[in-house]
Image (cartoon, rainbow, N blue to C red; front, side):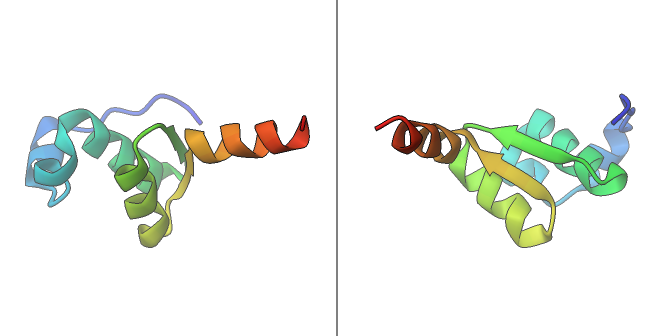
Length: 71
């Protein structure tokens, strides 16, 4: 995925900005527009993205899986 520019106006007009803030909203928009995925330690953000159909992985889920592999 290449770097993409999201205009401030688009971010501020998005419904997500009040729930997730400017940066996370820009990540959501970029992932939706470019078929990208989000890797995050923010559980609500990861679940929100998954519900939108945007690929998202919650870091603690990954750590849990790795921990179980090496037990």
